[in-house]
Amino acid sequence: MANIHIPPGWRLRESEATPESVYLDRRQFVARMGGGAVLAAASLACRPGGAAEAQQRGPLDNIPDTPTADLYPVAVNDPRFTPGDRHKEVSPEEIVATYNNFYEFGTDKDGVWRNVGPFEARPWELEVTGLVENPGVYDLVELERAFPLEERIYRHRCVERWSVVVPWIGFPLARLLERVQPRNDARYVGFVTFDRPEQAFGQKTQSWYKWPYYEGLRMDEAMNELSFVVTGMYGHPLQKQNGAPVRIHVPWKYGYKSPKSIVRIDVTDEMPMTFWNDLQPSEYGFYSNVDPDVPHPRWSQAQEEIVGTGQRVPTLPFNGYGEWVAELYGGRVTPVGDVPHAR
Ligand SMILES: Nc1nc2c(c(=O)[nH]1)N[C@H]1C(S)=C(S)[C@@H](COP(=O)(O)O)O[C@H]1N2
Ligand SMILES: [Mo]
Image 1 (tube, rainbow, N blue to C red):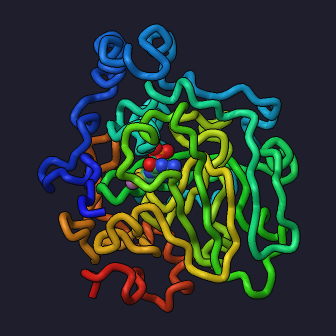
Image 2 (image 1 turned 135 degrees about the vertical axis):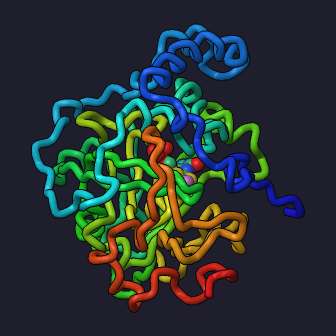
């Protein structure tokens, strides 16, 4: 396509990249949420979900009903995975549920939660295809009950230079892959998100994106103990705006490497295409490890804002998870050739 559309959030100049919410203290922020619902009602009237529903439903009211609700919260939280000395404070759920990237529901970060109403996130099937001994379509409920669920407090670092700390609930992707048994020739794992323009107005109206959203990992990355299949957050099943009912979280990579609401996992012998790499390969690589020393072509990655705190902190190589993953890349953070501007 001749015209590359850069998402609005990423078009910001360096000085403008600070999210609005970090300027507001918590009281102001919550007050604005309440007032915002009334203001937003007029513009929402023409959107799926409608004004009435938006006024009734708050940002924390987007947990789909599930017969697995009894599994949440979980008791297991292995402190080995919890961030160490820096940016370790868990972000309030009000922040994580109202400041989202999920372009299927529009590009306004604080509007996503208002637009997810029509999205039917349960029941849900997850298909595993490709180079595995046990391909198949799995009911998500079955998977939630098959693997012990645990909580992982992970840093999430968006390429736009904001970060949050989230208590996710789920199970390691490695457990699922062990169950389906990749064949010897399997080298990559691809993920594909739902395709439902009737339920996700961003898929219907933003035709310049190549829906559905797709991502991927190398097999050894996917098998790393950190790579997580997420079905819950903050002690309950996932909110729709955070990728209900099942998403991936890969904490040492930029946020776009963690696809939400996935319906398929493809095990392949070729490197899969990914949504952002496909759209803008000069800016977004396949590996996309968090790297403070490789600036985005349009902004530095040396620092990040912790959303909701007003704090700006140095960004860490591999987002602070180097001890788990540096060996996968021979010590380099950004592999050679991942993005053309990296040295
Ligand atoms: N399906 C899908 N997954 C997605 C995205 C998206 O637009 N669609 N955005 C990505 C980006 S850029 C980020 S930063 C994270 C945001 O996750 P959060 O809103 O739960 O914090 O989701 C990632 N996964
Ligand atoms: Mo992101």
